[in-house]
Amino acid sequence: MNNNQLEVLFIKYHRELYIYALSLCRNHHKAEDLVSDTFFKALLSLNDNTPYIKYWLFKVCKNLFLDKVRKDKNYTAVDNLEDILVTEKTPVDSIVDNENKKIVYQQVMKLNPSYREVIILYYYCDFTLKEIAKTTGLTEGAVKVMLYRARRKLKKLLEVNKGEL
Image (cartoon, rainbow, N blue to C red; front, side):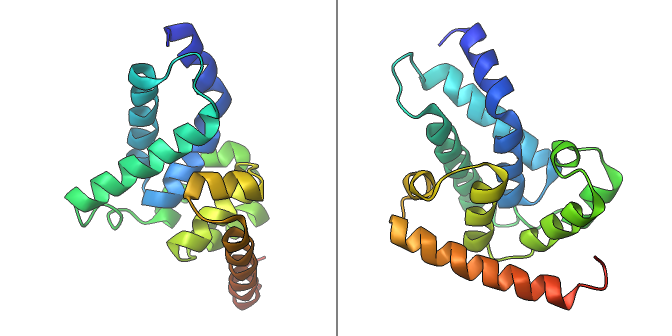
């Protein structure tokens, strides 16, 4: 893969990949590192005929995250997401543009990792159920059930915090 192709991929997918990485590690700087490492791997590994590049990128990002978690057990617990959203300008700010959407996003980030992952992929990264299944390695039925449960859990969280909305 040449630099121009990588640049096109980066422009097309970096924001979605960043949001996904942030949902995994819950740390702005670590999410940026994951995205950077993912595109570095793409530079080294992808060729012109690689099918489903978007899903490949997301799968690589998750695998890199899991590798880092295995090496460092404290990898996900360093920074508080609310502090990041309030104090630093991140790509989330350009996508999550108003206060209500930010509150919803903060509540999504409080979900357990599997629910958070399907919500992020479905609503923020525009994946279909079939694409989520392919990316996560789950069956499409399992993704439907997980998305349903995640929505139900998110609704409860929002009801508890509706004074903020």
